[in-house]
Image 1 (tube, rainbow, N blue to C red):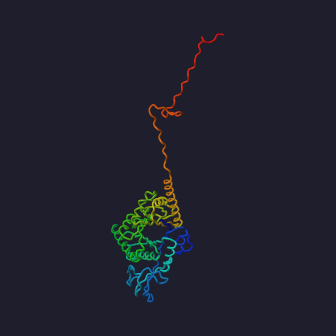
Image 2 (image 1 turned 180 degrees about the horizontal axis):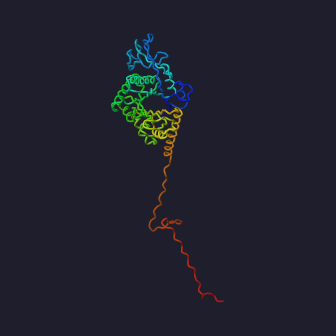
Length: 389
């Protein structure tokens, strides 16, 4: 099965709520939406006396994403949101324009399910595990909050990247980031009961974790990691435009194998400049073309979700769907013509003549053209025989 959708609420959507965006995606004939959790406005406060004993999800008009003890700076324990609130605990609530509380998330989840719109969620883009301790804790918390929101929405993926390498050895940085990713997947496994997995996308900047090899190796090493095939980022990282379906097929196979069968893919146009310098553009204006990818996807039955990260969002999502359907039609037509074409008839060879036999009456020999019949010579008259007058 293949799905197409935009990375965010469609530009043409008149309402700006998440439920309006899901309905608009459905009306446009699309079946996927990557929710953008970009702006983070957390509010940390202590548990009130009247809230003691209640579940965090039951608090009205409060989108609770973290429950921790009263110790300053302590991270939330996995599964803490499922336990009744205690005194002297700390709550973290988000002021998010796309939902106001857990009940609001449940309504959105029900709408997406009824309209068959597959939801995923992208975590905040700023991630830094090698800066200050404060930035490290904030990065971990934001990814955890993304998992909580994804679980409430019924989204199956929380997509993020892992930020810059450390200032030391590259291998040591990769090893430390692998440990952080492993801790995050374990936290998500316990908190969401396995309903949300962590998607790691590559980066187009060489100073940021996320080469093709690093993302695939992380997915093979850490259980619960899904590699995200972000083609514009890989094109910028590897300085390639992937113009031929043959160049894409090994790449698709690698990511499908590493993700366990389902492929999550981001695409848009891109202008490539120097190393690590690129700009996302509409598909028709960039150096990347979707046609080769459409041919490669139509050649096999992939279980894939294609997200448009183009500035045109839903317009390019529908354009990619159109190109894929055209490629699929050409593939079907070729197979149908090959199957319905009758076998070529071969003319039988003429029977061989026996030596000395003559051709049938009225037939010509195939070996040599008939010789012309010799005309008889004219008779000459003798002078003696002529009658005298």
